[in-house]
Image 1 (tube, rainbow, N blue to C red):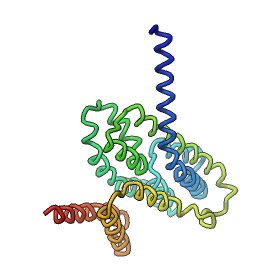
Image 2 (cartoon, helix red, strand yellow; image 1 turned 180 degrees about the vertical axis):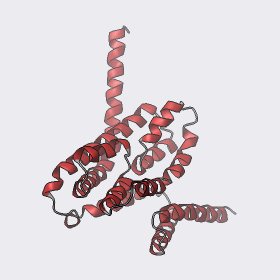
Image 3 (tube, one colour; image 1 turned 30 degrees about the vertical axis):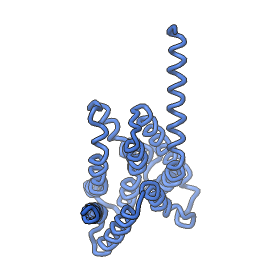
Image 4 (cartoon, rainbow, N blue to C red; image 1 turned 60 degrees about the vertical axis):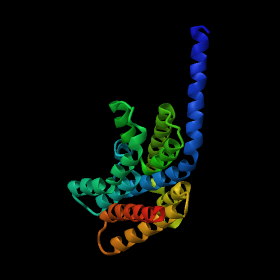
Length: 239
């Protein structure tokens, strides 16, 4: 095989990678697009320019944190308060990274940094399912991440442009899109009764903590307690 034929084979393989990435990302796009639009609209309503709205999606790239930041901007919170709140909300990424780290021991530092920057709740769900099934293809991993990030940025930009023509997102039901997407992701990952039990327990604990005034810590504490509860139930069943 000469170099021209080899080049064509490589191009075909790259095309197949992007097609597979699009196939795996397609279910997430149904959540990314409306949530990104909602974020863009809310950011525009809170006084952020279209440029700043898009730059936040490029450099922060965390849907829940961006929505929280926009709400805090609207409430007149200080910059340090916004940074602290988004940092606390994103602490859950430490748990996600710990779950994926056993599959990435041979990755270079630059690859780990690039992967970590673009990891979200949704891509974590996709990659954890892939990795646990033995599919650790780096090209596909980064293709999914880049596709997801690009769609999020474009949806944010479109929302910022359309914001002036949308009086409120609540009547459109867009404020429920983010929870609905997380429920869909949970249904993809829950494989047995114990998973659903832990999910229900964690959800109830999170709501209880939120009502008790824990605010941003409710998700982190509920996650730790839910994982501890699940590990205890599994250990009990194994005896």
